[in-house]
Length: 462
Image 1: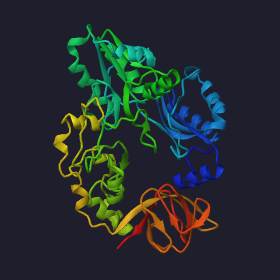
Image 2 (image 1 turned 90 degrees about the vertical axis):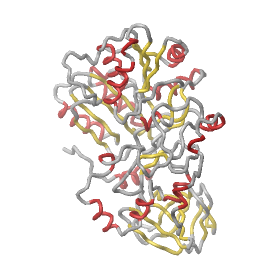
Image 3 (image 1 turned 180 degrees about the horizontal axis):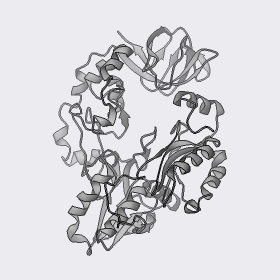
Image 4 (image 1 turned 30 degrees about the vertical axis):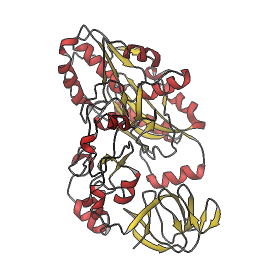
């Protein structure tokens, strides 16, 4: 009985590409009393693994929280696996605004103490006694009420790139931090204000609304289905979006566009930008905002220190991080002394470009490219690996920056692949032989070693 993944993320990605089938990215949650979370977890894994369902799922005695990727042709069969359980009959599946076949590459189901960590230890707290659910039109209407206080119950790195107009956006890294902060700030408004809340898909607000009712707040409301469902409703009904910017998501996409507003800035140069990335250094993986120019110059790194590390031999990189905590165990997401333009918490309610004309961003406008001026660029980032055809020994790459020509000296680099240099003798560009590839082109050429999806393609320029 298989209760774990047998394929790596890279192998799964190749299988998905070879299958060529449309996949859907979706999320759902349900609060319920589950007597045996371990058995529940194992039963779900067996059912979902058979349907090629992938994702990140947490189960606990209080319910289930899931973000998943499902083959479109298996959607109804997947629904049937949920209908087996009374508490998931008719459950709403929030489909992503933008689907990506590679949003998840493993099926990970973990048993946790809680599906949403809240830091509470109160046996009298009833998580099912929730606030009033509001659909998109109702949510817009209540936002226009001057008696309304709207709170974003997501983390600072989520609200930084997109939020509802006039929302309180706490400068926190976890949901559990938000509860006491907002409770203290709004102590004097338990009866005279509408407390309206939202999050990505609704699960955090479901618990938050129950918490604030438990604390004595009288008029508690929440956005039904969160930002994901709101975006679909406003499009279907043709109503105004009061959400501005991008919705951060916890899969490989890291965000989906809701409106064209860009309300945040590159953490390295200050340019208007709302694209998150993870630092390329495996001993760091800091989550931060990086524009295309800084991405190319800094090679996906958050600092010159990390840039130096990724060019070390792999064995030296491993040695540096051996025995040390890495990733979010060390760094606060999006916060580091190396990032010169990090702003979070209460964000301006207009686009950054508009804010600049009003002088709001003047304090961060000087010397916008300092971090890039410190490095001497010896190569430029061209793009990333998309696929490797093992039998033919051919790699497929997408060109995202600059131009590639036959005769160029190139570097393919990755944590497992290491640093491999080649002279590009010939290539196929968009399925036809060519001597030049430009931004947006898909390029294939012979590679005499195995490449991986984490690999980057560079052109050596000096």
